[in-house]
Amino acid sequence: MARPGPGAGVIARRAARQRAFRWVVLVLLGVFFALPLAAMVEFSTREPGTWSLLANWTKLNETYPALAEGIVASLEQAALTALLMLVLLVPTAIWVRLRLPRIRRLVEFLCLLPLTIPAIVLVVGLAPVYAWVNYFVGGSSLTLVFAYTVLVLPYAYRAIDAGLSAIDVKTLAEAARGLGSGWFTVMWRVVLPNIRSAVLSAAFLTVALVLGEFTIASLLHRTNLQVAIEFLGKSSATVSVAVSLTALLLAFVLLLLLSLVGSSRKAKK
Image 1 (tube, rainbow, N blue to C red):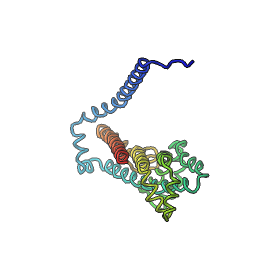
Image 2: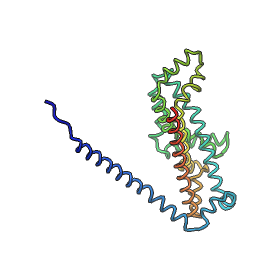
Image 3: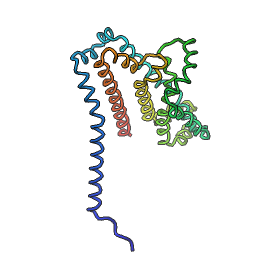
């Protein structure tokens, strides 16, 4: 004889406890993340002209030229790194799925390898390479794009691989090939539109990582936003904290936009 299941009252109490636990966790996490941000706002407003200075790009460029240079350099590095990462990784991931499934584990291992190597160790290995880069290309901060592309591979690969796993790539490719499409058309017009959210996620992760990277740029003596903030902190702590807070808010806005884009596309489907 089968045992009777839990009553409706027991299930309701269990669901109520789970909801209460989720709310407690959310409140604790909210306080944990909100308190440092509130402290940053309070500290950055101790000098009345801090945020007015940030709002005036011309004045900011005149007062702190290194900061303006770092902001421009980081934006350029983020855009170029995202572009280079997508050009290299998206066709490779699709091609491995379609034509070379046996080496998928090897490609995954190589892409995830930078995640296991500390940034300081990467710099030790990259320093001799960048000595030749300086000799042939020069010491521009944009040369960090090559190092950053390696650094973002684990995160970008996981995002793109998750997008490919969510669709039947082989069936889509075989249907397109049966209709006479070439491999380039299959990748560009069939597979890529179906993993657009994953590509946007990979691009966002790349931008967020590049905007927050400090170790490689500092040790290779290149300029970016974080290096400029560290340098700025020696002369104006309030402006330094205000710029850091602005960078965090920018990352949050990018994440929110990405979420809205993904939600709107799912709703249309």
